[in-house]
Length: 326
Image (cartoon, rainbow, N blue to C red; front, side, top):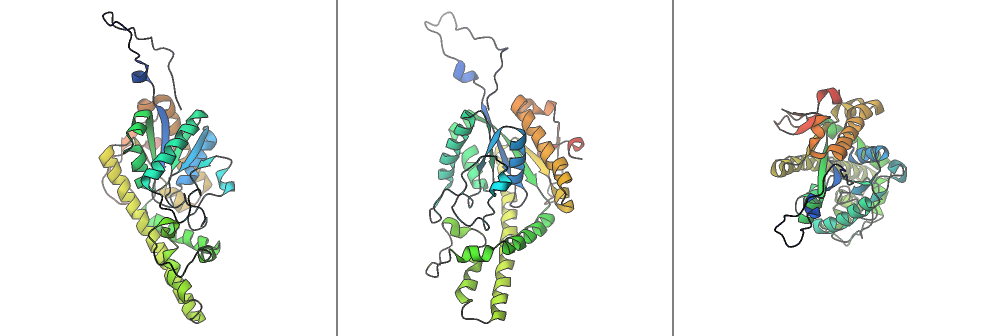
C-alpha cells in the first residue's frame, strides 16, 4: 500500500543542467508489506486473517508444505471457514511430486504481492518457512528496493508450545490424518526428501503402512503409537529450528521485527486473551506501520526485551510496550 504526501514541494532542476532530471524514482515512497513469522503452531495464519479483517489485506502463504496440493490435514491448511472471506495465495497449487524451491517461492510471492497492491490492499506474508522469507525479503534486491517491511513474530514459550503441538497432533489424528496419508502411500517409493512427501506425518507412518497387513492388532497399535510419538517429536524439533533461524535472521539482517508473546493465550486458551494480547496489539503495530513507517514508535512505543520467554536467552528485539500487551 502506498502513502503519498501532498505537502512535498516539487524539486526544481539545477540551473546549469541542460535538461531536467526526473527525480521521482528517488523519492517514491515504498509500498508496505507485512510478514507474520514464528514457529509452527503459534497461530500465524489466524493472526494474518485477523489483521485482514480489520485492514483491507490479502494473505500470501509462506509454508513450504502448504504450497502443495493435497494432505490438507497433515499440512494444516486453513479451511474456507477459517479464511473468513480473506483471499489467500500460494496454497495448494503445486504438484505434490514437484520440488518447489526458495527461488520458486520468491518468483510466485513477488507476483502475488504486486497483484495485491494493484488492488490497493495490504499483502500479508504468513508462514513458518524462514528460508522462503529470507529468499524474498533479503536475497531479492528488487523486493528490498520496492518494499518496506514490518515483521510480526508470534512467540510462545517452547514448553507450552510443545504441549500444544502434541495436542494438535492428537486432533489431526482424530480428523483423519492416517487415512489421508494412506491415500498417497506408495510402497515402491522410499524417498521422503522431495515434494509433499517431506511433510511431517508422512515418513513417520511408512513402517506402519508397510506392516499393518501382516501383523496382529496389538503390533499394529504399537506401530501407530510409535509413529504418532515420532510425529510429535519431529514437530517440536521443527519449532526449535524455526525459532533458532528467526534469531539468526534477525541478528543478521536487523529486521523491523516486533515480538508478540502469546504464551499467556496458550495457557488460558481463551478468545478474549488472544484478542487482547495478540490480535489488537498486532493490528495497532500494522496500522502505525502503514501510516508512519519507521516513525511508528511515536505512537506504539518499543522496548528492549531482555529475556525471551521461549528460551531464556537474552535478546534485543523491539517489542510491544507493557501497557499495550497487558
